[in-house]
Image 1 (tube, helix red, strand yellow):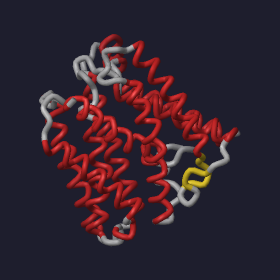
Image 2: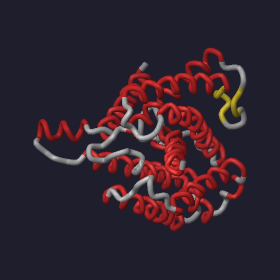
Image 3: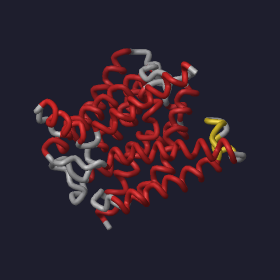
Length: 287
């Protein structure tokens, strides 16, 4: 009972922080009660920066670098990637109307890191490979997240709805899977996941995406399509972290969130969903 209460309170704080930092509400509240003017996108940037550092720290610890120098260098490389998108974020110079080759290459790099994890995981035995993998696997998604909102003044809530749809996908995949799940999705990596649960998550997430798309037409992109992407890629992100933990004999990525594990445990799905949404935005720009 005590564990359930701690887990529930921890989860509630987590959801509240994300809601306040990915919308305009925290900025409005500070101005209303304290007469402090802080643009809402500063809170989004702070949150994504914290998530980046937390996930990278837990990932590099999980990968068990033999040299601390390579571990430090992974932070440096991820920082360079993040800085490139930070400039676009603060100078408002990024536009999906301007398709740069570097953004396509970055997507390909993320795809390569995922391919390495699932198909060539034995390559992650050297510090140099771990350095490149961790910097790309963690650095790119949080960099992409900075340019997902349609506007920063005022901040549009695309990132919050990404989180919301991920939570819906996870919740209904669990509920449907626990009730009807018979066919294992990936028994060697995560034996509790089922194809029935995956399909249940897809159905309810797409219904939620339809509602979001109907109520908030000013959001960037078609959120029925985005909800489908989230329902597909969120479970893959969870499987990816499960594979990493199995490879390196780790139960939880950390213990920052009581009852939930580490930051990476909470954001494994987000890490996969954001590149998929970023790619979708690039594609609809071209078309």
